[in-house]
Structures are given as structure tokens and as C-alpha cells.
Image 1: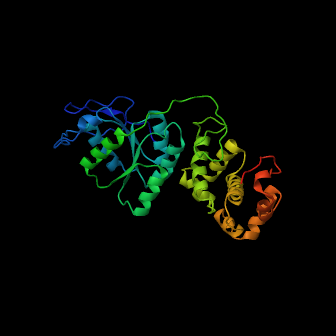
Image 2: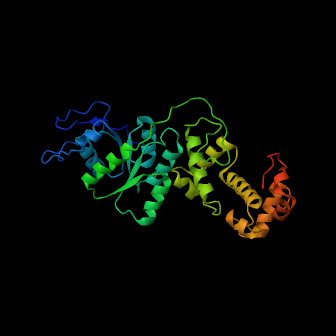
Image 3: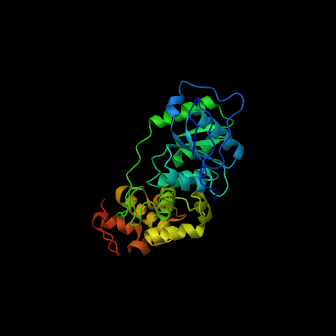
Length: 317
């Protein structure tokens, strides 16, 4: 992991001071043709901005510009480094490249939005080729905007100003254990410390799984999507909910199937497809193993009075 961030604050119209002992990789002021003064510069004075980019030239360019606007600039070299520093620094805004090694921007964004301590921080993606699909993926992961490379610095300044105005307050932190999550709240706390990496990995992955219950992902691809590896991801699930990733997915599919049988008139084949089964027969077998009766029998007997064999409670039609 890269060394700790640079904390460089150069107010407008003042000369640059030497870097402090714990600051690294600060950009040198432009010797000729400094960034032009702007009537909007005061809006950014003192703002804490974390720049996450594996390209040193792009990173230094943004650091130089933002410092001239009076920002306090911190840097990270990949998505995992960015996530770690965001938790430590608590910046007002994050500028993050998408395509990076170790953990890309999308994976880091999912981690940031799954962590109660960083969920409130607005994140703007930096990209040289913001294709429509990439933009949709980034916004779905929780980003608020995009800035394309090469930079138009007046656009960068205005976008930062716009999103800083609408930034919600940071949540209060609590070190106490929290209650168990409900089935319906993707952001509900877990029976582990809310800010541990285990809880963050679990929340980020759970959101991906629940959004696409009908798709069976590759475990390696799922781990990569949240910036980790398969072993670490399964460990996080075991610590948070006591089961592996795919055991969790299977249970969530059965819960959703039970809900659909109770609350809709969809036929069994459609429900099977909706929860990721290729055939109604395979679905019926899995449902019987979980609830002690086939889907058709569950619906016929009336779901409102049914109690699962494991005592998980009755459902309501």
C-alpha cells in the first residue's frame, strides 16, 4: 500500500510552503502561468479532497490545480488505498479514477457506499473514456458524477462546488455492537462492528447479490467487484452471517421465492427463473428441501399460516 496521503494546503495568492515531514508526493506549483484565479475559488478554500488515481501525472495535475484553489489535497494510488484513506481522512469529496490495479474505482466505490463511516462522502469518477455502460455502472455503485480526461479545470471546479453544496452531514460513529440486519434493509447494521472490513465487504456484496438474484455470479468476479479475493470474501460472510457467499445467496433466493409465491400470482416457472433456477423441477426440489413442501403445495395451503421447519416464522399472503 502507498505511503500516507499528502495534506497540502496552499491558499490562493500565497507562496508555496515546504512540505511537512509527513506529507509526500506534493505537486510543485506551476512556475509560469499559475492556474487562473476564479470568482468561485473561495467556495473550495479549505475543502478536503481525496484524489485516487494510479497515474502519477494525472494525480499531480489535479493536486496542483486543487491546491491553487485552496483545497487540502490527499492522494491514493488505487481503490483499496483510496478506501483506507477515506476512512482515515474523512474528506469532503473524493475524485477517483475508474481503471486502476489492485481494486478499481467501481469496487472502491461499492466499499465506500457500504461503509456507514464513508457512505455520505460524494464521489466523482475520473475517466478517459466514459462509455454509457460505464457511466451507468458508476452511478449505480453510488457515484454522483463524472469528469472526463483530459480535464477542463473550470468544469472540475464547478462540479466540485455543486456537489459540495448538497453534501449531507457525516454520521455519528459508535463503537458499540449493533443489531442484526433485516431481510428488507440492504444498509441495515450487522451483528458485528459496523465499521469493520468484514461488515463493509458483506454489505457491498449483499447489495450486488440482491440486485441480481436471478444471476449466479462467478465467485472470483464477485470478489473482484468489491476489491478483494474469494477467500477473504467468504471469510467476511462467515464472520457476519455464519455461511459462505453461495449459502447466503441460496437462502436469499428461497426467501424471495417464498415471498413471490405468497404475494403474487406468477407461475412456478416464472418464479424459478426470477430466483436463478434454470428449471421448475430444480427449483421445486430446492424449495422442498428448504421449507418441507413443494412450491405448489405451499401456495395451495395458504402461505399466511405456514411456519418453516426451522422455526423462521410464518409468512403473510
